[in-house]
Image (tube, rainbow, N blue to C red; front, side, top):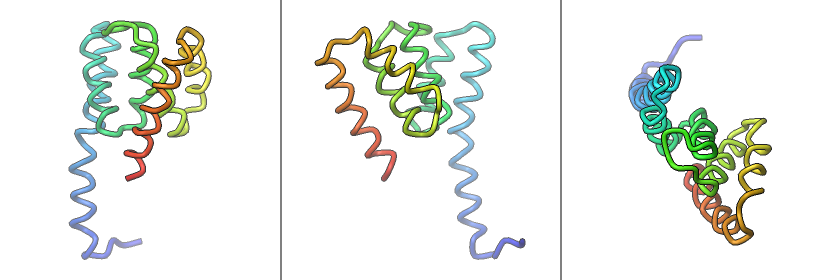
Length: 123
C-alpha cells in the first residue's frame, strides 16, 4: 500500500506530536528502573496529562503506593479509572483497591473528576 501524497503532511504532524507523548513515558520508565521515583512520577504525570494511555496506570500506581509523591488514593482512583477506560485489564482491580480506603464522598468526587477526564479524552 502506497501513501497518497496529500496525506503526507498529516502523517508528519501526527508523528511530531506523538514523540513527546512517548518520550515522557520512556523517560519515566528509565527513571523508575534506576530507582528515581520522583523523576519517574514527573515523567509519568506529563505523559498521562498529555493523553498517553500507557502512562495512566503507571501514574496511578505511583499515587497508590506513594512512590515519588505522597500517597493519594483519590488520584490513584481517577488514573486507574482512565487506564481501565483505555483498556488496561488490571486497572479495575487496582481502582477498587484505592476505593477500599476512601470514603464514599471521596469516591463520589473522584468519579466526577474521572468523568471530566474521560470527556476530555473523547474530544
